[in-house]
Length: 125
Image 1: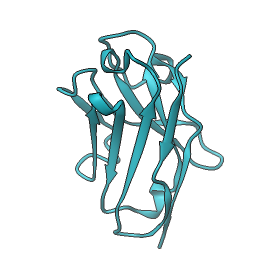
Image 2 (image 1 turned 60 degrees about the vertical axis):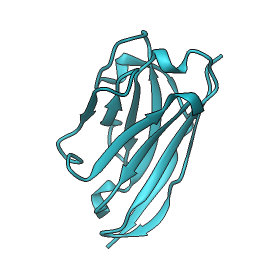
Image 3 (image 1 turned 90 degrees about the horizontal axis):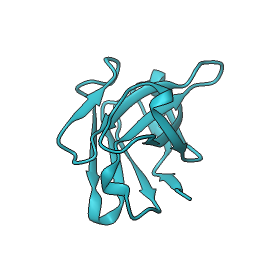
Image 4 (image 1 turned 30 degrees about the vertical axis):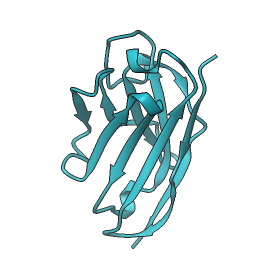
């Protein structure tokens, strides 16, 4: 069973930074892309960023491009999401997810089949 645990969320003022972590309990972690998604109250879950299995390719939603950076440390089974220049509209529960197939990346919810429990990020204006 794959388990993903997010951490690092919290309350921050607009313009501030947070770094989220996603720790995975699986020996095959390095074979899979990891995605970050978020869901604000009353809205659908949306894609934020993804990183390929090797870390060689990264993908971002237009809304976070240039402000967020996704990275991974495969020996530590951990993926990070560095969030800078945060805005109130970034407020949401952030989830990490593991791709459903090895060696493949994607930006759709259906591309992922294991999800963490989420961590709350609140940006005050």
